[in-house]
Image (cartoon, rainbow, N blue to C red; front, side, top):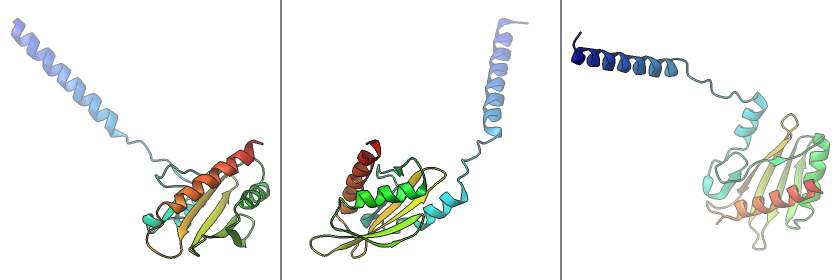
Length: 157
């Protein structure tokens, strides 16, 4: 067999091998991660419908969930203790695994923060949104960043 024919055969074989390997790699797509139904329900409940005046622990704003150790009761106690450091906060509704808090600014604007405790994942998800207006000029984000810092500092003590 002439050298040219051998080179062409080798190239063809190499190309076929690469194609087969490429198809094999894509033949079985990776399964997306399956979230628990509770997480899906929490995500839906805490979704931001208007992103210009709302942040949550699922978004891309760099804010994540609050982490806790212990029982859901201890997590709720930690939330209450951290909220006590924010005089503009008023708890308006609470149950075993959730809490609604209204923050009122010195100008009278009200923002609603919803907290949801996920006992299994030991995390507290939240949404903070303005009750009036389309823009919050970053207030919800800055408040939740400060709240997260205070919550984490309390947890590490």
